Length: 60
Image (spheres, one colour):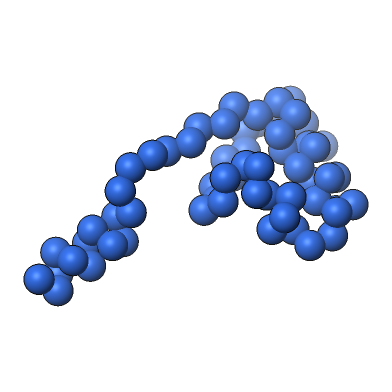
């Protein structure tokens, strides 16, 4: 019902090529990901792990 009417933001700690493996049912994964990825704009961030960075600053 929302298709073409608004945006959906999906965040993940997995790379997009790993999404299928993270969903354990191949049929469900295909159904979900086909709808999400078909018109998606993928933005992958790169950089240091900020959790580790913050931890070393507070413990050091």
